[in-house]
Image: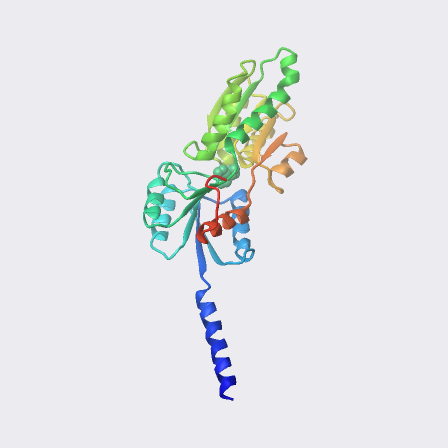
Length: 291
Ligand code: FRU
């Protein structure tokens, strides 16, 4: 009897110590804004809480495209017990200081999709935005082929996201570098702010001009819908070809199927890989710094 008691007691002690040792990894995610693309990444990260062996808690905090708010949110996150910060900085320069403070506390930081202007980060994971710009430019060049063969000089307009954010800077870098090699096209670039309304306003103005554009390349599909709205309003359907980025089902893919856009570049989400990278960092596994 005494022996059974002893075994039971020992088992209980082992079980208690196991559960005490099982750490819950707290991952805070600072999202710059919302929208279909970002919401999909957030849902994937939340689902990934149950995907891996470790006990992990993901909290997503959204900054509504407001840089000041994002800075305040990161500052207050730095005072919590988070183990790692995942951040998509709304603007590359202003958010850098808040991130530096987090790093000073020894907390690892993953940039996802967007980068800040500080090299003091643990890892980056995101799409190749320079490549997205180049691939879109290549597509425009293909589409322009028949017009060029007929001796036309079609106007190509790039409508950018907010140029204070790293994806807009990189998409522009890729697209404009290709366009500068092709003077047979007339290329102009207009800065917008990722919103459909602003893209619509810009497109309306351009469609009213003496030489309206033939091609619009927008930095996301949301802005491409704004351009399409302007095209419909100005009775320019069939005269204009629109390209976007994100390529989500229910958004860009659908607009291409409807014929509103001629193409959309698929910008991958993969929230589960962000959580995997975070866990590799937290558990001391090998990981790539730039993904
Ligand atoms: C959403 C979004 C996407 C875009 C990405 C770039 O906030 O604007 O549409 O591809 O951000 O960071």
